Each structure stands twice: as C-alpha cells, then as structure tokens.
Length: 107
Image 1 (spheres, helix red, strand yellow):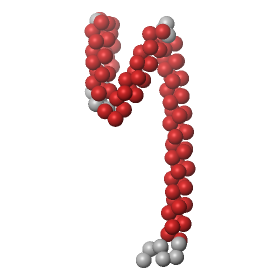
Image 2 (spheres, one colour):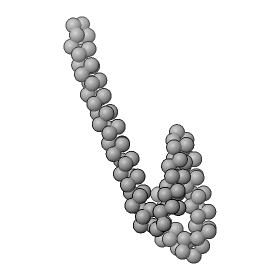
Image 3 (cartoon, helix red, strand yellow):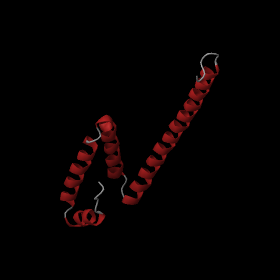
Image 4 (cartoon, helix red, strand yellow):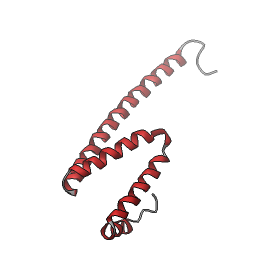
C-alpha cells in the first residue's frame, strides 16, 4: 500500500465504477490475506465497513459512522493500553520484591 495513488483510484472510480469495485475488492482481499494472524477479524471488520457504506445513504453519513466506529475502537485500544501499563507496573513491583529478598539480589 506504500504506492497508493489516490488520483488513479479516483479516476478509475469516476470512469469505470464496476472495475473500481472489482480492483478494490481484490486489493482489500490481498491486503487482508497477508495478515494471517488477524485475517478473520479483518474480514469481519471490512464486511461491517462495507455494510455501513451500503446503508448510510450518502458518503458524508458513511464517513461520520465510520469515524464513530474508529473512535470506539481507539477508545477500546486506549483502555487495553492502560490495563497493560497497570500490569507492567505490577510486574515491576514483583520483580523489585524478589530482588529485595535476602540471597536473591544481584551478586
């Protein structure tokens, strides 16, 4: 995706919408297939995105809904990161206690 050409995609969409959607589907499928560890979840997410776009009625409404979805996912990620930080702090406390035990410190 590092060579994504927005203008080329825009031109394809305006001149041949059917081909645009075929190429889009192939490109998304290939991108998702390269991420084996999260392929199923990404396919579900893409299906949800496509569903939102289909029922939104306009690109503006779709963009708003997708932005809300992104915000929800970012909030969830922030919560996971905070929990991870707490767990790291707890592990550091445990390591410090172990090191402080007699006969367990650095030699």
